Image (cartoon, rainbow, N blue to C red; front, side, top):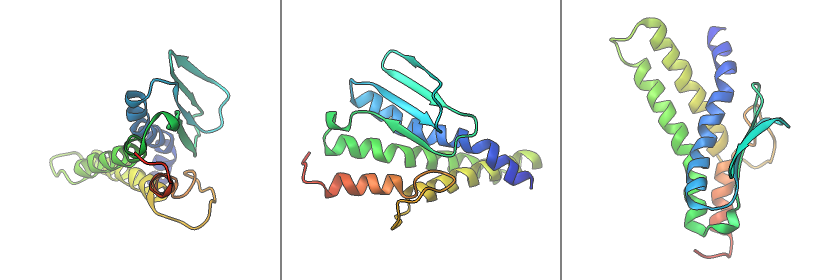
Length: 156
């Protein structure tokens, strides 16, 4: 029960972490507006070309940028950024969970953090047949983005 509550509280934070993994390379590689949308919130803020719209109960997320401004490799870097950030988050949570010098509550928190990241990683990266929505967002969205990038006729 405690772990489930922790996952529900952590989910929007983990989604933000994942989307920051896409947002950072998109912001570095493009000159146009780059934004993160967590959930379906009309509220947000913008600073220059950067924007964030979020709800505290977000279960879906996306990073918006102009993919036409990038070649195949640039779009690939942006697409891989989210899974890389999520893998890093899972590794950090797992290393905290496996550290015997930490207090038990801190080790348990590490397990919850690691599981929240692994959950997002699985739902966004594993290929699926349908376009259905899950609690976390579009299943296999990052995998589909990579597939579209490399299956398209547009070259580097």
